Image (cartoon, one colour):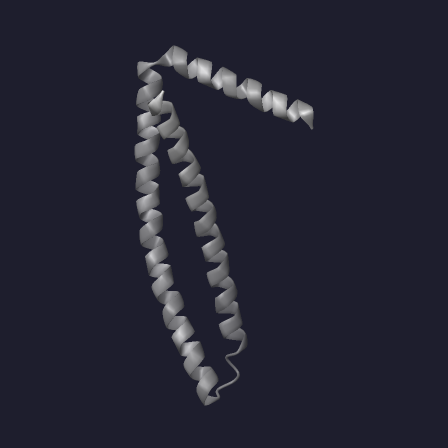
Length: 111
């Protein structure tokens, strides 16, 4: 039973992490657009802030790509674990899938 809960927890964490990464990428793109829109203002303080923001964005992109690589590796490990579980316990996997299908069907029917 703990293997099932662990697998479900990892899948939820993966989905939440992917959503967070997607939101962060969108935020970085918006910030870059804002910085580019202010490029015509070459005033001292604004130029310094723009330069600092570009440096921060570049550092964030590097960090995000390393986190994304780590997340991909973890997702592969979780997928391999789920695959091994299904191969070791095929009838339990069928039962879990049928139960989830039933629950999803009930929730959809209530709408």
